[in-house]
Length: 142
Length: 116
Image 1 (cartoon, each protein chain N blue to C red):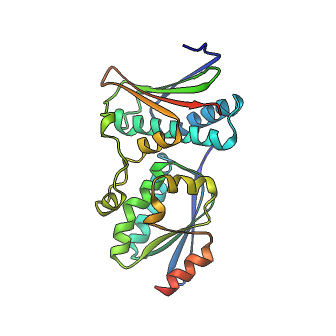
Image 2: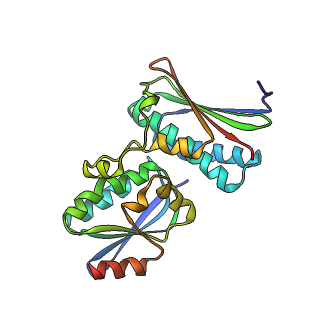
Image 3: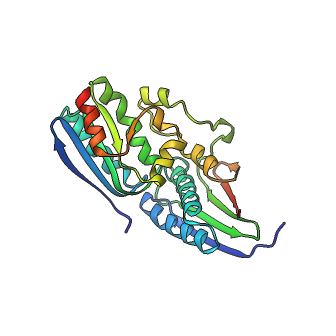
């Protein structure tokens, strides 16, 4: 396993008004370690989507719970893990929803995880509902 | 503070929403309530100008998904204009350009509303 060069951790209440703080931290770290503005904005959005899922779904808007964001940097990549202790989900069921169907039914969700997969180079899930759910997102330095 | 603001204007029977700032899961309900007000007032021709929008997540896109069917059923449309490339990319990644009218500038959208 490559040596971790830098490590940052953020533990923050599961509230949507904290999304801007999470985005700020992630985007600043991404730019500091060498990603350009465009790549940093993709990383920032992916982490926003993962945290929004935690707030809305894992913790069902219970703001007493905490989201953990852990950022690790090695020589080749940036690794961001968003973890919660809430309700898990089945990662195998993730597919881009049929927009036509979603619109007809007035559904407006289901897009976040698809975006994360598109924006990051690699995404892994470790789901243990009620214990610890982790979404691990990786971006390689080009 | 990364806020979000909506201002409104009217051009004939088209309602124009100018959205500014950061549209995420926290601020999406503000936009939703503006759409709801327009729908309640039976104003179904809606143009959203993204010129001053700096950020959007899927929660923001969800607002457009939630209203478009109802608006179209009533003979109207939601047309989106003046997106920065960074904002358009999010719509594009999720396949929205096939379902929504996304135009370079407000004048083109007004013209299209005029044709229908």
